[in-house]
Image 1 (tube, rainbow, N blue to C red):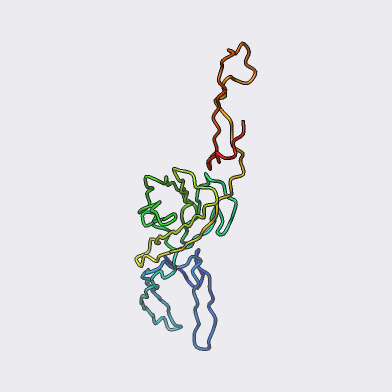
Image 2 (tube, helix red, strand yellow; image 1 turned 180 degrees about the horizontal axis):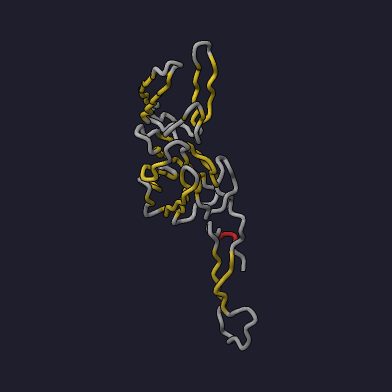
Length: 219
């Protein structure tokens, strides 16, 4: 594409043309950055006052992508406490230069594989949505975490460059303590029942997510 035509900068390019005595210093600033590993060809043509023409060309190569991807937007946040047992693990994987290779994503939860090469496992469902330069990732445990459990998460993934720059990071959060009282269910005779037999037994079920201490039961 033309950057300068007859001394005038074209769309997509700015810069300067300044006199230096016998000629001009020319600086061209593309509005958009070159791409990593791109080969950039430059062609120059100019004439002097006697109509002698300069024609010259050369090229250069932009450096390869050497910047690793980023991870942000952790939910639950690293180091957070009091999380619900059924919480999902969410994070945002991005790379501003070449994007993230979602098939390179591997996640472990407490050392167990949760995402392998961009796919969930039997114990963890995995989904993602596209965002700017990457993906919003959601890991959903099939079984709830335990009360008071510390959950350690490790995520590893690469960008889409030829160098496959890699991110690797770990964080943890903790699940809240059990703050729900046991429940009574399957009560017989039912509360408010009438006409109950004189020889009826009284039965009920007492249950709790974290179990019931039998020594505390009083009826």
